[in-house]
Length: 160
Image 1 (cartoon, one colour):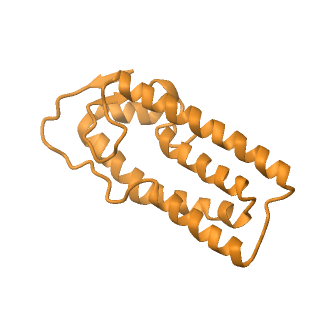
Image 2: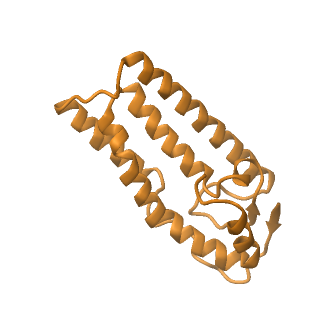
């Protein structure tokens, strides 16, 4: 499903915060805690295997989402206007696959550094992404796409 539009009016859909920023802040804060108070996730081989899996999922989500956006000629950058409502690729099962990929990348960093502190920083980081970035984008998309976006929201979950 794709809905191409010509915006009737300019609507500010720009995010007030770069979406990767909460994850970056969380990972750095967790890394600082890890430096002073080491708290490993578990045996290193298991942490690295989990990190590799999380990284593979992140790459799969990012590649699939950017391909779907490119096919519909709309930008992945939340600072740009959306010209199509995309519901193909990873957007068929998550309204926010790129942010989900950032969460997987955050987990991958935690695993590669074997740091429970970095992993613990993920929920607050994603809460910030959800409240500050995603909710604003949802208001923007509803204003631009109207009923089509609401129908999409009824079929596809915000995260998983």
